[in-house]
Length: 299
Image 1 (cartoon, helix red, strand yellow):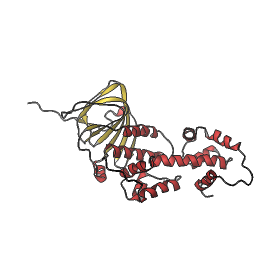
Image 2 (spheres, helix red, strand yellow):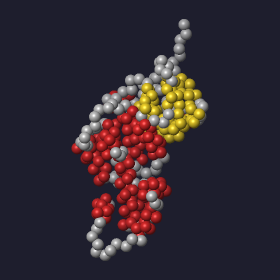
Image 3 (cartoon, helix red, strand yellow):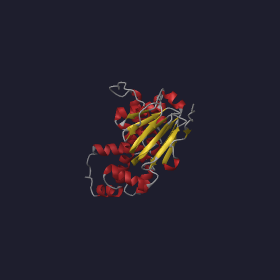
Image 4 (cartoon, helix red, strand yellow):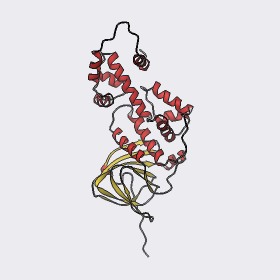
């Protein structure tokens, strides 16, 4: 009678030499891995429950409990309990994986669990994974909030049930939304906002996007760019580097890229365009001007 050997236990990703980025969050570890075309990763298991979102390319997940091999492409999320043996055959296009390793205590705290291995169609999670991969390379002070929020949303949506959504945001969520709008230049985190709301961060991140159609970090960044756009025009003597720093960006070049992607022109071109538009003497302030004044910090 043969005795089957236990699979090798490996951290995420299974081959760390192909890891391109990682982040450690409370109860979660996030990693991005790019595996080359045609690679086979032999049978192994992970010590903790895990989630793999396919962000590009594809793989075949081979499990060993009677399940058929699962072809996994962008839009698919693979869930595995701790110690679940599996192997992977990478497609001819390679694969980009965004992987979450989850502390069991964190899952218990959320009231969630990964009871069995599964490959699920979750297009919204794959889109979040692609976005998270890009955000890991950002260099502004909204990065931590965005990465944390996206990771928590990935987890919540992957393990989501289909309970009905409320018709309108509850009061605690409205307060959190208004706090982001009022304190957009401060250092905010999903954990802080969720604690103030008396809710777990996983549920908070999901509820925020469902209610407002945007993640907390996305709203924060949008407000900062809007403030910077107004500041460039209101204070023409202030350097672009100073405006970038005051808006929460560590690096002026990153600020310029985000600004251009959001507004359609560079900070310098934006300032120049408005500098050529004289304001009529004695004209009443426009609604936009009032909004600028309200968004600007106190002097």
